[in-house]
Image (cartoon, rainbow, N blue to C red; front, side):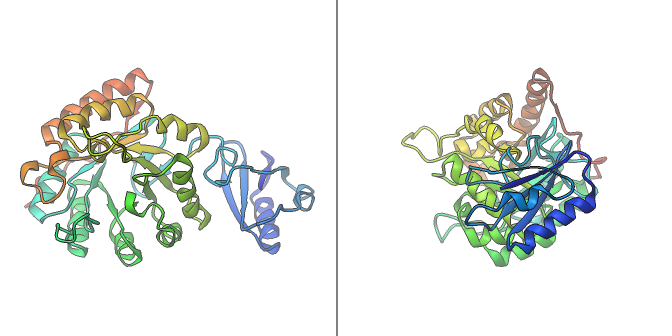
Length: 351
C-alpha cells in the first residue's frame, strides 16, 4: 500500500499520516520526492483499509502496490534516488558517474597507500578494499580485519577518498560501520536476511551486490529487506552471475542495468572485475557498463597484481585505470552525462 501526499502537504500532515499508519500496527516509510512525498506501508499481511487514510488532510490518493518489493519500486518513488555522503560532494545516482577502485584485499599500509594515491590522482572517488574476505578456501588470505579498516580510515584522511568495504556478518558490520563511509554486502550474503536487516538499521549507505545465481526480483527483494528497516540509502551492484561459460569467471549481465532502472529508483553500479575475472576484459566491459546507463563502476586496481594476495588476475594496473577513466569520460559525454568531480585537492604522498 502506498499513500501519496498532495504536493502542498505540510510536514505535520505527513507526520500525522505516519502516526495513523503506525497506530494501525503497520510501519510507515515516508520517502520525499521531487514534487511530493509518498509513504510506503509495510508489515501488513492483508490489505489496509484505504478509506481510513484517504480522508486525512494532505492525502492525495492511496494506491495498492502489486509488486512484492514495495519500497524499492518506482511506484513509490518515480524519480531516481540520489545517495549522498555527509561532508562530501560525491553522490551516486545523479547525472554524474562515480568510480570505486582499489585492491581486492587490504594487504598492508604501504600497499593501500600506494594504490590509493594512484586512484585519487586519476580521478577515483572511493577506495574499495576488503578487510574481511569471504574466500572459497579456508586456507586463502582472509583479510586483516580491524587493522585493515584502520588503514582505510587513514587513506581517507590522507587522500580524501571515501571508503567502501564489505561486512560479512553482524560482528564485522559493527566495525565497518565505525570506519567506512559505505557498507558493502557481498554476493555471498545477498540473501543473508539477518545481515540485511542489520544493514537496514545502519545510518550508513549500503552497496548491495547481486548474488551469483540471483534473479532480478531476488536482488530487488534483498534491497527491500534493507529499506524495510528504515535505511533508504541503497545502491545495487551487478557483479556477474554463474553460467556454463568458461571463458570468464562469471557472466556479466549488463542487461540488468536498464531492467533495474525500469522497475526501481535505486542507483546501480557494475563490477566488471568480478564479472569477468580477467584483467584484459575489465576495461571493455567497464566501458560497456557506462554505455548501457550504469551509475558508476567498481573495479579492482593493484600496483603489483601478479603478487596480490587475492584476485590479482582480475586487477588492473594504475595505468590501465587511468586510461579507463579517460575513456569513461568520453562515453559519458555522448550520453549527456559526466563524471563526479575528483576528491579534494590531492595531499602529498604518504610518509
